Amino acid sequence: MRRLLMAPLSSVGRSALGLAETIGGATLLFGRILRALIPPRFDRDETWRQLYGVGVKSYAIVVVTALFVGAIMVIQTAFYVRRTGATSLLGYGVGFTVFAEIGPILIGLMFSGRVGANTTAELGTMVVTEQVDALRALAIDPIRYLVVPRFVAMMIMMGLLMVLGDGFAIIGATLTADTLIGVDPSVLISSLLESHLLDEYLLGLGKALCFGVSISVLSCWFGLGVRGGATGVGRAVNNSVVANAAAIFFIDFVVGWLFPVGL
Amino acid sequence: MIEFIDIHKSFGPKRVLKGVSLTVDQGQVLYVIGSSGAGKSVLVKHLVGLLRPDSGRIILDGRDVTWLSEAEFYAVRKKCAMVFQNSTLFDSMSILDNVALPYRKHFRLSRDEASRRALDKLALVQMEDAARRFPGDLGDGLRKRVAIARALTLEPEFVIFDEPTTGLDPVAAANVDALIRSLRNDTGVTAIVVSHDLRSIFSVADRIAMIYDGNIRLDGTPQEFRASDDPVVSQFINGRADGPMKI
Image (tube, rainbow over all chains, first blue to last red; front, side, top):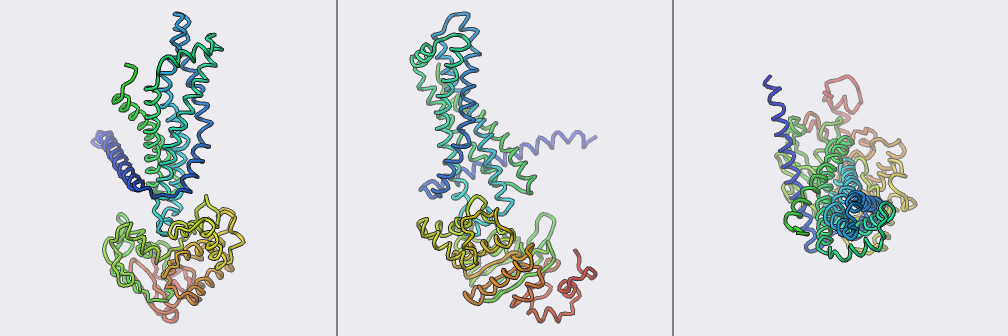
């Protein structure tokens, strides 16, 4: 009976300890990454390889996600636009939600699922096959050689993919507005341009950069912390995806709270 | 010279090393032998800081390296290379890039110059023809040779080989043995070889130390091992299933 009562408590305790370990470990790793960046001492070849890999791996999924994000925003507002005839507000509505909120979150989630999970699996496999120890044995710092290039690549690419994603979201919105509710593309574009959404656009870009930082740090932390062979790699990838998604929502909340726009 | 002094190491409740003391003289090839899980690899990993002892000291050329920081250990690792049991070549790189990597990182050489030097090292192990291939394309024996070439890039004074012939066919194993012998004879490196390959042990070793139950059971020449009347040593070197050894 006592064991039955204690089980939920110990489960909560274990989760709290796991969370504290993740936050503490990831923060320490972030500190080590910053130390390696000032002054910059990391492998440039590996950074180029990562920039290419991350960009190529992600752009297609980001483009598809962005097209649907734009389209969905139009579908959600179509009813009110039809009813009120407020077509001139369609560009503002789509731009505001896509640039500041939905775009960064959905693209961040897709990016973390695609690139973050891949990074955790790759580093985790390197750990269990002793490739990380082999680097250390060759007197090569795994943080500078493996982690910092991935950090730089993910941060830069998340920003660039956000710019790309915003563009394709507007394309998706324009096509959907034209096809489904008969709003001429020029009306939506001019409504968007007249809405002066630069603050929202920059806020979204800032969020994307923050997501890039958190995805890279958490993915690398879970990857380097793998124990126990193939099972351990699978568990780490799972934890990494969950932690990245939670971090994205948390960062979105904090940034949105600190830098309110559209008020 | 390398000295392990009273090394203790546990993983959770399992006490792996219970006060191992061992000395390796300059230019010597020392084989550390023992059954699987005896703690051979655990012991040698302490030398390059991949593991830290619970207690005890490790002295390398008169310097206590036991509690050096990770950054301080990099200087030790340039002097003391390690060839891992599973070769641990980097999958994403060609054989040439694997061997060129330490040149690029430590000597700040151009890509071309690093590749040229890497090819020289690959030639030492007769692997220059495989330079453009990837680790996944090679068999275990060939990967081991590449791993040895990579370990030699920093011109180490000491080399640790962790089970270099395990899983190899007899010809590939004999090739690796010949490489270790030629390294000792041609470059004078001091080598610690972790192994339970009896053929290798008695064809290459200058000295042998057997780890059993967390301690050194016998430390001596191959002749002393052959002549030993210790039942544990005798069971191991004769490869008998029956005897006092605890598995």
